[in-house]
Image 1 (cartoon, rainbow, N blue to C red):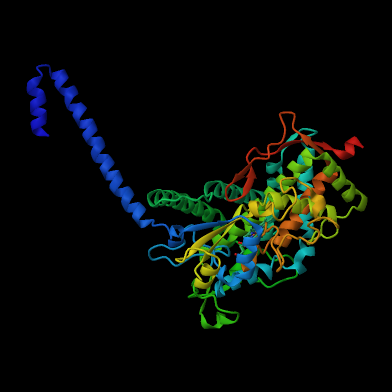
Image 2: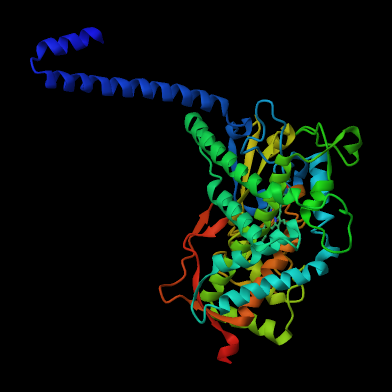
Length: 493
Ligand code: HEM
């Protein structure tokens, strides 16, 4: 370097030129050193953030209904676990799971029983009615306040539904300010952590590293909002008082077995072999996030897609309205008292399942061999949208035709969950890990659709038609959010 500078100076008589040439050399050399340094730091970071083994396994996609049935029903015992898409472990850290990520076993059973035996238990449904009514009234009031103007459906439905999920989770006394803070961190999380797949080891690691950082940052922000609210819950009287017991209260009382691992797919009653511990902050944040996200985004997606089809097909909209107004019968938890409403919701879920894909990790040699999967084990992705539109299982699968779910229709006996004999659609998944929120999800979608169809006439926005292009992230959203004109029916009577 010194020799080089000497050479430049001796060749140039002008001091100004010598200085320029020296800078010419210094800048690229500095940049080179900096780049090498960054590359070294980057490589070390990437090496630390090694993608989980399951991300490096071969991935197989299942897109047809018969193959999905064979895997999830006939080989249910081999399809118990989801692959780890994000690392929940780290050096010196204990695994931290929620219900979606926890391996099948004692801990999964404790989480699942707590949710389905608590807030989601059918006996609590009537207790939820006042809160649900409040949410429906908020939605109608919000749309009414816009006059006969245009509505971005996703936004108004989200704003009405999220407070309901927040109340079920944190209690009815949660304040508006806190509800909105929760909504912000949850929405940011859903937009940030979209699940996509990448092949190729360097790119895979790069994407994984980036995803890891976004995930960790998002989780930190969630913890900042959730934990003070959880800490503010009264520490006593978590017994069931007969009123709605918020989900976090049940989590505060929960004891989960220690030492659970992926290979422990043992039968009922194994919990006694483990010692128990209270939930860690990480687990608490994960479970609350799952409850709020699962309970809101999927329902918003379902309502938006349903309304999109009702805007395009006014005949279906009018038929649905007639059923609702004539009978003044709203959807109950099974949606059984309004058959056409149920048919409309099912048709929407068939065509646009709010969760685009569900995954499993398969290691059982027998299942791998029988299903012709890679012998070293596989990640299996069930593409729910394709399964619901399988031309071998459905007539005109791309047409929105709720009548197919009505008596005499080709799908008269098809419900939201596949039975043991066949899979025609699986918007709530199938097998042991099917969605525990199915009843609540169906009920909320039915209540919201019924209310907005009863109160408003829906038509395309003046700015243009309805674009049915799908956008798959965590949830299946409309690429162009639905804008529609909502004219109050009562005024037009
Ligand atoms: C329209 C509404 C909903 C749809 C379409 C939906 C869809 C799904 C799907 C496809 C799965 C994966 C199932 C599988 O892998 O076989 C799932 C799992 C799950 N859902 Fe939902 N969901 C909805 C509402 C809800 C609600 C309201 C909650 C809770 C309040 C919820 C909580 C969960 C949980 C905890 C799991 C993981 C279950 C396990 O692994 O044991 N979901 N959901």
